[in-house]
Length: 249
Image 1 (cartoon, one colour):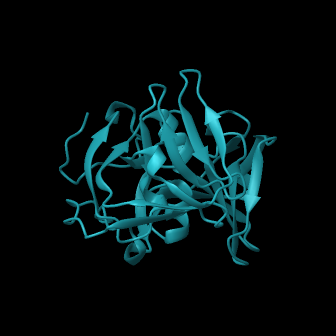
Image 2 (cartoon, rainbow, N blue to C red; image 1 turned 135 degrees about the vertical axis):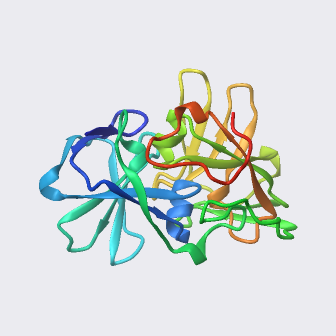
């Protein structure tokens, strides 16, 4: 199978395991903006065909995380000393034939969704939201609660997040930045995705008409948010199902 980041500066070929892991750990949520999914492939079954945009961030001495420096797409997770690599399921092109087989770190899930795929829990109180990228080069606060969270399954969101995105509307001028080091990837339609150039964490999306939303995974619990709707579901990945009973567009 072939895969790529959103901007095309990283492309690859792989023959992965059919089982996909959904990871809810705080690191994966910070970097992907919601939940990250990946499947393993032996190094002998994986080949980079273009790597000019590939960047690596070591969040610990146990693993490093690969992302595209051009668009911020979270692509790879490489455990130290292992002869296999974990590849973002959302990065593959076309039908994959994969399926979600495991869910990891459920206790670290965001409070705005049910990590087991059921209806989201009631929102928690949250007067101030605390956001950050994985490496801490970007830190901000904004008034809470997070409110309604929309999940987007379009190709662009799947490519950048590695699964699908989840975000909430916000007033861009209300973000109080304590640390700020950003890069934006702009689409032909005029939208912009803001991410950290050091760790690749997705932070926000600004539409061509100026509408602004923040990645839900960038916010630490409690968020005061609740997953409310799925959009662009016609473009969703073939390796997962939507089982929470929420409206789908």
